[in-house]
Image (cartoon, rainbow, N blue to C red; front, side):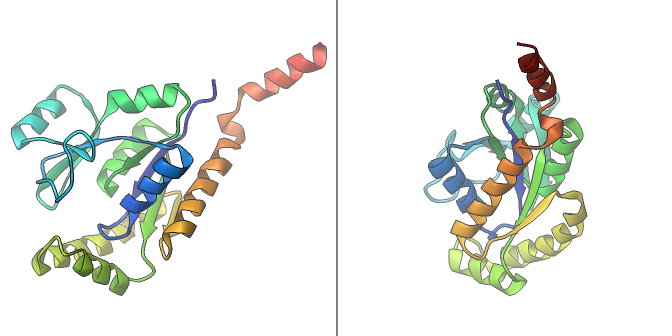
Length: 203
C-alpha cells in the first residue's frame, strides 16, 4: 500500500490556514490531526473535534508520557500533536495534515524527514492585520502580539519546503494539492517501483 504524505501547514494566525485545511479535508479527502491545547475554546469550537482542550497539568502529563509527536508554547499556551493517530493514518495510505506552529513543525521534521512543510501567508502584513481585526475574537494587544510573532516566523522560511500565498482560498487549496501530488511522484518516495518494473519485464 502506498504510504500517505505527512503534510505540515504553518502560518500566522489570520493567514487562513484553517480554512485551507478544511477545504482539503472536505473536498479532497485529506485527513487532519487533532491537536491538543491549553488555550480556551473559541465560539463554536468543540472538544475532540477542533482541539483536545487540556489543562496545563494534563498537557504536561502527556509530555512526560511521550504521547506527543511535538509540542510548543505559543502566546502563553501549549499546543501539541498526539502521535498515535498520525502514524496510523500514514500507514493506511492517507495524506494527513498537521496544522501546527513553526516550533512544532521543525520538531516533526527531525523525526519524519519526508514530511512536507508548507508555510501560508496572506499577500501582505497589512492584510494579515485586517483579517485579525475583522475576526473580532481578540483584543488589540493580542493582535499586536500575533503580528510581531508573524514577523518572527518569517525568519524560519528557509527551513520550509514551500510557501503558499493565500490571496484566494480556492487557489491556495489548489496549490497545496499540487504540491502533494508532486511529492508523491518523487523517486525517493517510490523505491519499490524499480523492482516492480524489473519483475514485470521477466514475466
